[in-house]
Structures are given as structure tokens and as C-alpha cells.
Length: 379
Ligand SMILES: *[C@@H]1O[C@H](CO)[C@@H](O)[C@H](O)[C@H]1NC(C)=O
Ligand SMILES: *[C@@H]1O[C@H](CO)[C@@H](O)[C@H](O)[C@H]1NC(C)=O
Image 1 (tube, protein in one colour):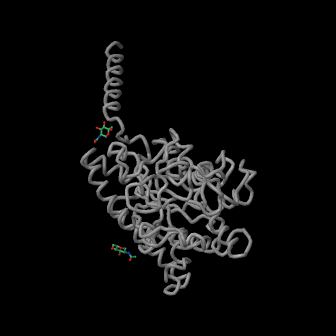
Image 2 (cartoon, rainbow, N blue to C red; image 1 turned 120 degrees about the vertical axis):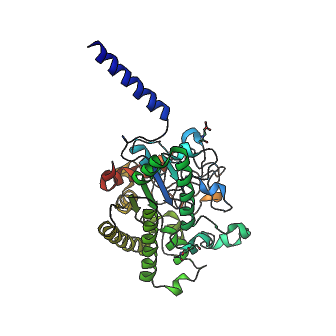
Image 3 (cartoon, protein in one colour; image 1 turned 30 degrees about the vertical axis):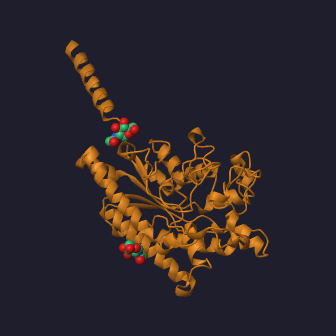
């Protein structure tokens, strides 16, 4: 009896010791040991802070509802979807940006973000002039060369991912790092910029080279090659995120208004999103059949997002047609200025934070919905 108790106590001690010794290193107990993110501003937690681009948000009022009221480079008043997903999976309540010098491999072992605001599936999207070409009065603003987006294209995010894998390996060893890479949940979210800032932009000639259907297939092909690439690097659990109802972004409504068509949603763009999402869903089904051991889900934010926009009050919002920041019609990035007297006080009343991005509250509702409809498979 005595020795059994001692034994149990001893093994508990050893367990305690090893688990505290391992600190942040993920254990086999968590089904998803890390969240790994690729994409655009819908999921960028601050990589653009470290590169030369005009597409930044590491200043107030961005982040005013984040921990410590800190602007991090997230295009939101607070947290963004991967942060909430990470929390739901019992990991950190945020996913740090790979290029943020305040984090290192011990943080990245449970979550890392390679996303870059402004990027797309199409290499060309990361070099187009963003929003500046859209609105007549903005053409006169002095942006010079810095107005070039120059953001991190998807292929380069994969290069960072390769460095990350190496660093992780030397930090926690071969076996554990293989485990993390294999069991991690990969969140992939991009595509809006390929349409709104590239295909439909007057500053590119993409539309003269591809029909809409061809361009969509071109992007689907890139996403397939991308998934295969990370699969060959070890990824198995993957969430491909669909497009939002992008014709209802306040910037699109404002453009509609300026062009004399009222301030409603651009229904054509919503149709483009629906069509693209259907193709992405088809790709997901095909990859699950063809690729050994992979589990890809299609995470579709479209439906719940549109419900929030159409019926804001049933979600506790007051406004969905304009954003919280400034006039709420066209400002984002540097145009979303702390001193602007029009910026709303309570972002929880708004579906959109700036003219292109949801508020923290909207992101939380979207994630709750995605967990219910697709991501629960990995919980
Ligand atoms: C990571 O950063 C923490 C805190 O800044 C530090 O204590 C730790 O030694 C660093 N770890 C590595 C592996 O560099
Ligand atoms: C994008 O650029 C990278 C690097 O130059 C290249 O390897 C890749 O094939 C390009 N992708 C497409 C679809 O052109």
C-alpha cells in the first residue's frame, strides 16, 4: 500500500516535472498543437509592419480593443479570426506574426502567421496599386512609389514556412517538430484582392487577358498547387476559407455611390464570390479524394457574413453599411486616422471596422460559425 502511494506520488511528480520542463512545447494531448496561417489582411497579424509597403495598420485607432489597446498590424479594432480559432483550440488567444521581432520560435511552436495584407493567389496581386486608383479624389493624393503595395506573395510565405520548419526542428527536435507540422491546423484565407484590387481594377490589364471564369480557374489552380506544396512539406489538416460577400464591403458601396448607382452592395461582386466559393468547395472535395491522409475543409464565411450585413440588429449590431473608422466609406490603413472625429466610439455596434475589414465582434461571430460548420472536425 505504502509503496504504491509513494509510487503514484513519484510518477505524479515526474509528470509534473516533465510537463513544466517542456513549457510551451505542445504535447500529444492537444489534437491540434499549432495554428499556422497563410493569406491576406483577413488573417495578417502584423507581418506588413516589417516590410516596405503602404498597407499597414500598426497605429491607432487600429488595435484599440486588442490586449493593452495595442495596434499590432491587424486590420481591426481587436482580434482577427485566427486569434479566435487558436483560442477555441485551447491554444494562445492570438497567433503571432512570423516577422514580429517580439516573438521567437518558442511562441511560434503553437502558432505562427505568414499572411500579408494586400496579397492574393495571383503573384501580380501583391504588386498592384491598392485602393488608390478607386476614388477620383484620391488620385490627387501624393503617394509616390511607396503606394506600391509590395506585399508578401503567397510563394514567399511558403519560403518563410520552410525556414520556420527548420527553426522548429532545431528547437524541439525532429520527432516533435514533425508532429507539430503534421497535426497543426493550416488556415488559408485570401482571394478578395485578386478580384477587387487586380481583376476589376482599372490599373491592371488582367481583365483583357482572362475571362472571369478563366481567371477563377487560374486562381483555383494556384490554390491547388499551394495546398499540394504544403502537403509535401508535411501539412495534413487544412482549412481553405471562402470569399466574403465582397460586394458589400463599405468601400465597394462607396464606389457604387460615387458612380451614381446608390450606396447598395455591388451584387455582381457577390456573385463572383459565390461562384468562386463553389469552385473552391469542389477543389476541396477532389483533394480529399485524391490525396492520401489529407483532411481539407472548406470554411465558408459568406452566409453568416451576409446575414450580419442584411440584418445587423439580430446580431446586436447597429450599422452595417458603413464602417466605424472615420466616415466609414473609404478609409483604411493610413486614411483611418486616430484624430478623425467621425470614428465611432463603440466598434461593437458596427459590422465593419474600416472600409475593407470586419470588427473584432464580426470576426468572433464568423469563427463561431466556422467552428460549427467546418472546423469542429479538427477539435
Ligand atoms: C524567446 O524569447 C523569450 C522571451 O523573450 C526568451 O526567454 C527565450 O529564451 C527565447 N527563446 C529562444 C529559443 O530564443
Ligand atoms: C509566382 O512566382 C514564383 C516565384 O517567382 C514562381 O515560382 C511561381 O511559379 C509563380 N506563380 C505563378 C502562378 O505564376
